[in-house]
Image 1 (cartoon, one colour):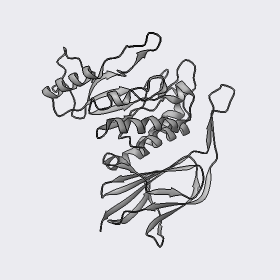
Image 2 (cartoon, helix red, strand yellow):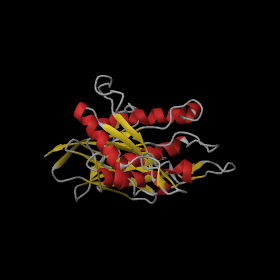
Image 3 (cartoon, rainbow, N blue to C red):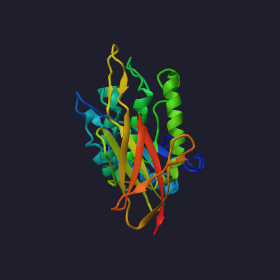
Image 4 (cartoon, rainbow, N blue to C red):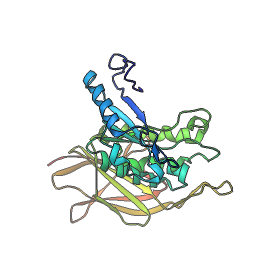
Length: 298
């Protein structure tokens, strides 16, 4: 819910899972006049405090955009609300590869921790730009989750410029969301850690430690090319085959089960080497793979 201090729209009209959306991109500036056209961090803090006095149960939120491609503003606004939702949009506005958006996510996490960061992947067309391909959207989302995003908020649901206007993209978002639903109870308690490595080039492993309940492993194939000119193939990727992933399991945890998160989830075999590292063999790999490693305390 967009919050207005003079509207009285607190608590009584907010659903159980609702948030107070204080302001959209308060850090925007007029680059020619070099003046702020958003609002100050001080005002955001005052508004959040005003909401908390009336309703301490529901969180507050602002969205953030990296002004002129920089993330310095994250360190000004990142801690002002309970949730900081960032919208880099570097594919649409800067013609950058989709996983580059996660660089901004990582900075936003540093700027706002221990508060939550949500990621807003672009799922729209702007002034004739092409839509993200389904593969790019998948890379976009899972790279952000792998670097600490606690929520995904696609922009935009619009039948003309948003993902409902692109059937393939909408279907892929549905697939991604079904997978995330299988992981959500673990993602919300997770923290990125450097527990994994792959035995092949151009595959990025992300590892999330989920307390003493699980470890999430995300693999992203970054051997691809995104093109943004109209006469070029939008996206091409080189699949990978027959490689191993090695995970260092903390000594106080014992592995119970390993599941690949795909269609309903399936249990996969694994091995341990002499040093106690968990080994997974990957036969075929296109864009991403997601694994849930269920653990318990020793």
